[in-house]
Structure formats: structure tokens, C-alpha cells
Length: 258
Length: 276
Image 1 (spheres, chains in turn yellow, red):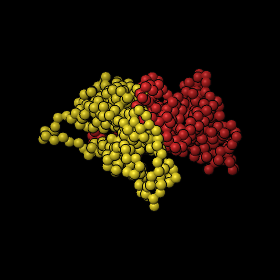
Image 2 (image 1 turned 135 degrees about the vertical axis):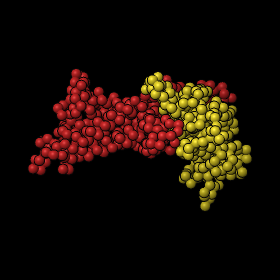
Image 3 (image 1 turned 90 degrees about the horizontal axis):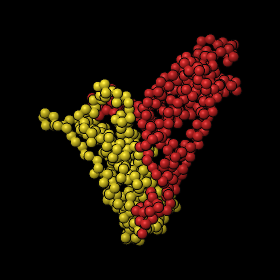
Image 4 (image 1 turned 120 degrees about the vertical axis):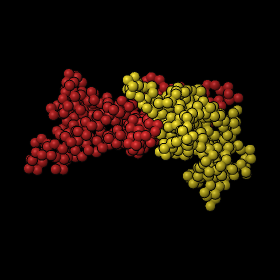
């Protein structure tokens, strides 16, 4: 059963723009991206949308639907009342290029600032070994599709443009956590996470976790564990005393601070 | 060109899509922070009044969790650990409440809740906050949130004391509370005992599901495979940790209800419902 969907879509570029009203014929079982594609095919041929897989795996079609950061391809029309007007805007934390397409290069700049994994020497037989439970620990973090919805919703940069140089954002705290928990990595990233990446600016209000389309528990499993690791490194006098008298946490042996 | 509009920042900043509204959310995003604000404010007012009252906190054999352990100049029978601070001129609750208060104030769940509800930073996801500058927890005083683990150590001790209080709450009641033929010896159980049991269960669930606890028992490790016992503990705490916020709320209510019940008993307003 088809019906006429009322949509408001932001049209414009960096010089300005506004929400434009449309009515699009849609069918049962469709998602917001389907409606936008029909709009593009029938009424607004120049509508700019970034999209690719239509399966929630490429992370291209991030936008804001009724003010909530979501993937266009994973938001079902059946989640809304048929009489409801659906408002679609580009992500509001990044510079707009045109219509629903934003410039997400901030995230790639932050990725460059993060040192990659530095593996130690191989075992005598030329192999490297990790136990299965250590492998499994990082799997949740590797589900990230880099849609940058967490980066977009994080108020540290969303509401404060001036914080962007000093703040890496939740997607990269995820990576810091993954590497710091990696048994074979030889870098100690706690100082870097707290300093250059601005971990202390996060006030753990959990919006990154709320919007993650992969349901990664970014705050509980990555950011808070990283904050606790930084507290070990910088703010815990018992750990400091232990180091002084030779009671070291052996887990960080063989790691060099970056 | 929009770039000349340098007075605006955040979602209305010069490079962003030009939308005046601070949020386009149409759901009731304000309900959760408003509820948190009302409930937390009510609790803080109630707890402050009760903490400064300095009376009606002991109705034998029940001791209010706000005053446990009672280390100041407490009423007879309330001090099971002595009165080392007998000279303290104010209410004995003030000596001890700093620990559970500090634990909750620095708790990762409560931080989320009060940053959203009280400081509106942000009030809800994708709703612009009203502040023009933001440094998070990177400077004083909020950098002190990093001492959460020490409050957790104290909270474990407080949990142990409250557990001890539950055992004491099975003691025989004094004659004025006697029911039936007036028998008051041996053990007893009343509604107060039941409330204290429920409270201590929630207190332990909240304390053991803490993120710092999760870190201490095993989260700090890099090799789970080398520490099988700690890994097992970590998996248990992790399971509890997923509901940390729920335990925070339940234990907040339970501690207030137990105190209120004991307050009403001690003030003579109600009589204990006795099971045996």
C-alpha cells in the first residue's frame, strides 16, 4: 500500500539554504533513503545525497532525520506515522557542501593524528600469537563503519567549533581503547589520549552510544575504560606509589609512551 | 556570505547548514532530563533535611542508612562501631554521608544524568547546549571526577556496614514494639528488616556494577588470557555494569524509603509491621 509522504529536506550550500517541502509517493517497507531517491528521480534531480550500500554497512548516508542523527538507509518509514512530516537535514556538526552532503574531513585529520599499531618482535617460529579471548575483546570496536554519527552528535564539537583542534571524538577514542587493550601493541597511548586527543573533554553524556547504528557501547566499553586507564597513569597516587616501590603493573611492560 | 556571521558558533556556526532551530527533534526529548532534575532535586532536599536533623534515625533495631555507621554523638544503641567523633558538634550523618555522596557525585552514570539535567551540557542528544564555552572534565574542578575509584573503595566499606545493619535488624524489638502476647526475645523480622534487605541488595548491585570496579577487577588488563580469574570476575561485573544506571536509581529510592520508614517509626508516627 503506497501513500503520499510529506517531507522537508534541507537544500542549500555553505552560502545558505533552507528546508524545502515535498510530497513523495512511497511504498510499504521503504526507508528514508528510498523516499529521497524517488524525490531525486521525480522532482529534485539536483538533490545531493551521499550513499552507497543501502545496507547500513558503508556509513555513507549519515544525516539527521527529525533532528536525530541516523543512517538514511536504516531508518524505516514505518517508524513514523503516515501523516507525519519527515524532516531531513545534513549532519549539523560538519561544514555543509551541498544539500545533504557534508565535508567530513575533520574525521580523517583526526585519524592521521592517531599512531597506528606497533607490533613487537615475532615469536621464534616467525609467528605472532594472541589468545582467542584477547582477540574477541576488540571485535566490538571493529564493528565501526565510520559513519561519523557519533562524531556528529558529540556536543563537544557539535556545539563548540573551537574544540575541534583539541578533540579527537568518540570514534577515535574507540580506536585508542582498542589499541590500548591490544596485547601485542607496544605503544602506551594513555598520555596521548588524555593530551592531544582531549579525552578529558568528554563528559560521558553517552550521545555517541545512543546514535551508533552498530550498537557499539562506545561510552561504557571504550571511553570510560580509557578514562580509567588515564586515571591509572596520571591521577592515582596508589599506582604512582606502587611504581616507586617496584610494584609495577606488568601489563604495561615493554610499552613505550607515544 | 554566511562566513561573515562570526558571532554564531556550534550548529548555527558559519560553515554549518544554515538552520536557525537549536534542534529539530520533535519527540519529547525534554522528558528524561526533566524527570532526572525533579527526582534528584527532591532527593537532595530530603537527604539534606534528614542529614542535618540529627534525630529520629534509630528505631531499635533499625538504624537509618544515612547515619550508618553512627560515629558521632549518637543515641543509645545506634553506635555499633563506637563513637570516635563524639565531640563533633553537628549531625553524625554529615561524618559519613560524604562517602556515598562523593561516590554518586563522581559516578559515571550520575555524571551523565546531572550534566544533562542540571547543566544542560547537552540537555539531550542533538539538542544544542546553551553554553558558549566548554572544557569538559579537563580542568579543575571537574578534573577531580578522576578520583571516583577512591570513593568506590569507601563505598565497598559502606556497603559492608549496611550489610551488617541488616543482620542487626533481625534482633528482637524492645518491649514497646511488642505484638501479640508481648514476646520480644529471640529474632524478629518486620517490614523494616525487609526494606533494609532490599536496600542493601540494590546498594551492592550499584556498588559492584561501578565502572571503576569493572576496571579494577580486570578491565585494566591487556591480557585476559594471562589472568583467567580476573577475566571471569570482569565478565560478571560487565554483566552488572550494563544496568548500572538502573541500580543507581533503584538504590537511590531504596535508601530514601528505608530512611523515611525508620524516621516515621522513631518519631512514633507509625508502628513497625512485624512478620514474626
